Length: 218
View 1: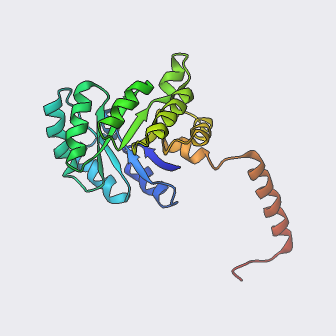
View 2 (view 1 turned 60 degrees about the vertical axis):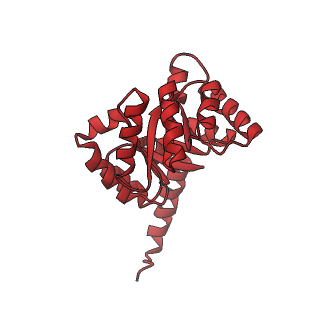
């Protein structure tokens, strides 16, 4: 499974990228607002910090305007994935941009039928929102499983990008089902390494090592 980090905080991205665990980045208008920076500026910095896809979202709602914005965003760097909403206009923009060789991330997916349309439009990524479905009492993981089955049935190349992830359990379940990518807030990505038994074991080993009076570096 690939890990994308869901943030526009360049310091967080660089710190996590140094671990080798970051395969890409996703942003959205809310994250750009939170960064307090111009979209072109912060997106260019992110693209320079990671080699994988960086999703930058259009703000338009009409197809021709989405296409124009998508082309402009794609000029920022070769690893840009233009993010469009799962509407008919978004699907039309996806088709046009994909046909021109631009990576496209179709976002705000909440049904398997929507995911099927995105794949037929040539999307590079489909972003089903797990957490938001859970918030209204539906099963976000069931959607991931449905999309996986449909894509496997027809050999679609569109990658399932599990989004709106809130917990480490979301990551584990999405990985078990076979999502290609999980996009995670930095805090959730960091928590993947946490376990109380790891902490306890390390504490014991360090205490015993101190008693030896040795230093590995001499």
